[in-house]
Image (cartoon, rainbow, N blue to C red; front, top):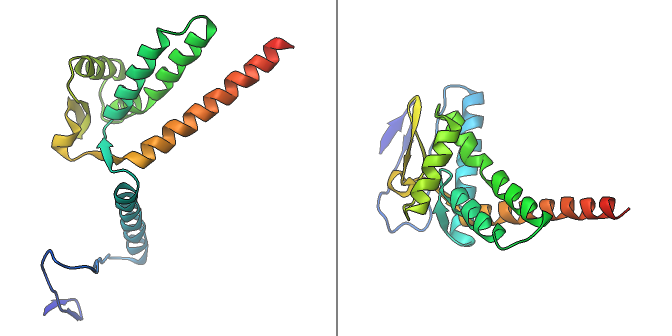
Length: 174
């Protein structure tokens, strides 16, 4: 038995548990509400990862790989469509660019470094450390994203880009 405030709680510890209780406390009702929301979000992410395809490297590493693949494919397309495909790859780079800005890095230098690491066959993302960031392997820092979330983001972005191209085709044909 352990005592927390006025509550006495019994703990059964071990890795064979099939059900668990998460005990969280906060100084105010607002803190407790925010903590509960954060824990629910975290559990939802873990559930998505377990139920729908695992995890992929985070910290912008997946976006750099997707953008590079799209750019490689763009080289095989002729005409105006190539510009649209290149613009899509640029749009995918927004997440690593934003991560770089948020960590205090120069976004252009960070993107160049990430692309160079990717071209060398190295997995790299933008890791936040204190007031700055660094280019490193996100798996070594435990930075992962659910694959289902990335798939949904790419599907949604592709659908939006396709709609814009179709609208442009309709307008230009009139």
